[in-house]
Image (tube, rainbow, N blue to C red; front, side, top):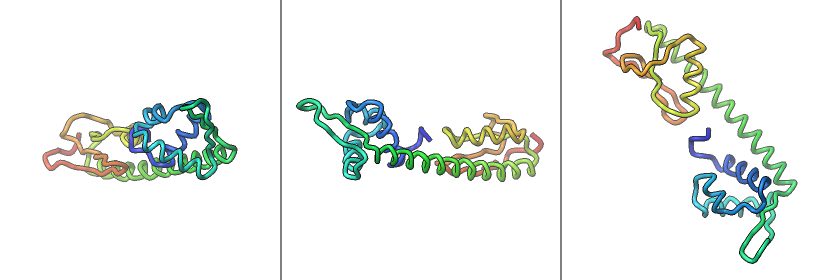
Length: 164
């Protein structure tokens, strides 16, 4: 999920994609793209070079050219598949958890919730609410789906009243 802290695998996928798209890409522009320090990009590139996934050639005196190897292309494909599988597992787990929480909400007599959080997990909450016919409100009188990282929990305020 893009807005969350990227894993090493997600960073390496992006690095390999950018290197394949532009072999003359600089470490500084890669660092900007990933939102990390140049030293972090350097560390990842060294790992990819050591594993034989990327080759480095000197283009000019101070300019380097990065070339993704066939092994690097295969590695990127494996990383991408693993990333997709992990994302789908997270999606299914989150959706199942939200369905369970919404069942509690409905059992308590509510047809509306507030979502406290941002990002992809919040979006899964929103879509699941829509699918279940649960309205989303900013009103603090309703139960809250509280997002903490990849976890979702239900907060029911004592002062909230059922039937909403």
